[in-house]
Image (tube, rainbow, N blue to C red; front, side, top):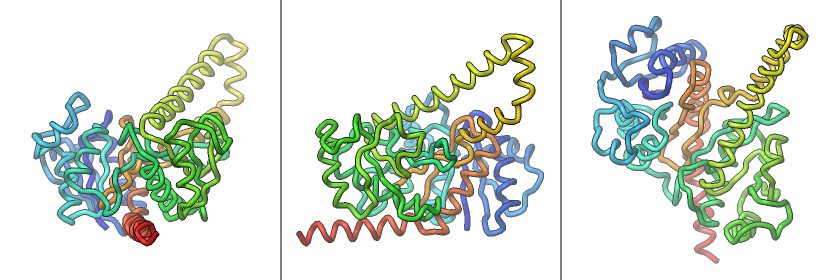
Length: 334
């Protein structure tokens, strides 16, 4: 199994990308990794080259680049060459912590869509209080969606959750402003009806306040609402820990208290750490494409590689293709 990685993408590239790749190679004996980027920089951190190859390029796509234009003009950028490795079947999956928009563009224009999927969805796994986590899609691949798109998101998310996260018959919820069946705008109301007839374990509407309590294993919504939800969760978590730190550092008494519960605070922080779940899958493409968080360090990169490996091993893309084809055939028979 071969995985291509954009070694120059992310805030801590290429150091943390290289370290994460070496960790993954040590953990999984059945993978080979191709790192794409500045070879001199990559080799300065590469202490174990076993099953790791390098494709050299000096060109890269930055966070400031306009995504579509950058993918079309920067043909030798590390992110574009990474996607090309997948397109030309030299790699089974790819990972980047770089420009999200550029990765989505490269996914669409270079890797290509899954047959039958109208629009891909960007899908991170987010933490829950019980540590189980839930999949949220879409979080920004498409700001607009119609009911049929949400059904496809639900099917893709359900397949991924069952095969990669090993959750049998995962529950699927529709993000809404209330749990009643008739709640929501026209998109939500129409999607609710169609989701009830989809080959998934649909449990109805879920509210954003219940997401971290594990309201559903898979939560679907349009990319606009999903992106707002994702950033609200991330921002709230960061600010809560910032407030906790300020409180515990405010006096000698609280500093003493903090020393007694330091290990518990670290455990709590790890419980809410996105890196435990890998990256965000760009579902609906012809091969697994993973968007690692821009601030990913070695552990997050290692887990993103683990995630990509599972998607290939359990044939997530192939299962999505066959399931969508079966659904479409049934619709035509009606």
